[in-house]
Length: 275
Ligand code: C2E
Ligand code: CA
Ligand code: CA
Ligand code: CA
Image (cartoon, rainbow, N blue to C red; front, side, top):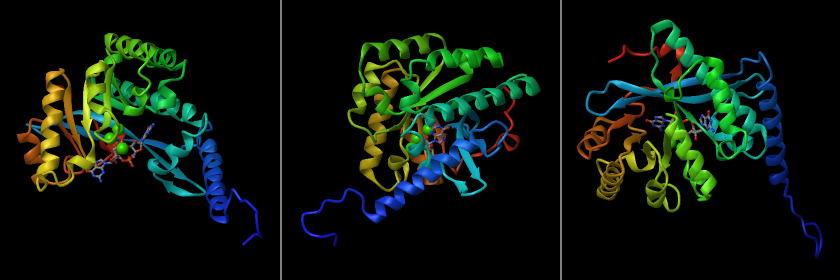
């Protein structure tokens, strides 16, 4: 369309997408500005599979932009991850989660462990560990109040420095959870190689597990492997009673999903009394 022998890197469609993502990125930058109140954490319960009692909560980021309206994290996190913006966003999330935990502890004398999603780039940044401890100190919390949810892409690096960092964090009491398990590459070897505390079976294997023998076999294998390594096994995205029944039978320790509770703002999700 643009004449013979002419190369074009950007189609109009790509231009439009690039423009949209730049718009989103700049809107996100202003959301991070002091006092903007566009960002909020919602909390979703993670429950004991047998009793249904909530044992932890996962912090999930919400963004209500005055110009773009509500934007889901599946849309804006990948864009933030393309730049250093994810570092500021990650810091905001960690600070806000700890602030909430401290407020719960002050009001009720205790708080649930909060699982915080951490991006690869954030986790591998040289200042991450120091930042964690400054925030702990600022909010007066023990490391055991926070669990870091990592994806397999973090572990793909396989170097000694990474193993050392994970071991130090575990020794200091931080929970380390492997998120979206089963969706990455050489998942099973990661479980054995790194010192984690929890593995979360991805929603894609949970959805319809009661009607799919292959999914069920996979869940059984992950539970067995996880337990032999001393890990807590969580199934995420549990939506139906039928799924819950199978997951319980297959030995999952904890369940998370709309069936047990949707993500909600902190004021709607006060901590349950200590057991
Ligand atoms: P994720 O970490 O796998 O989080 C679980 C997602 O599944 C959440 O979507 C949650 O609302 C949704 N979910 C929970 N139960 C059910 C269910 O029963 N059925 C269905 N269909 N969905 C369920 P959400 O909140 O939209 O977050 C999407 C992704 O965005 C998260 O996936 C995570 O990868 C990322 N994310 C969210 N908050 C943060 C954050 O603070 N930092 C980082 N780095 N990533 C975040
Ligand atoms: Ca997660
Ligand atoms: Ca997940
Ligand atoms: Ca996910």
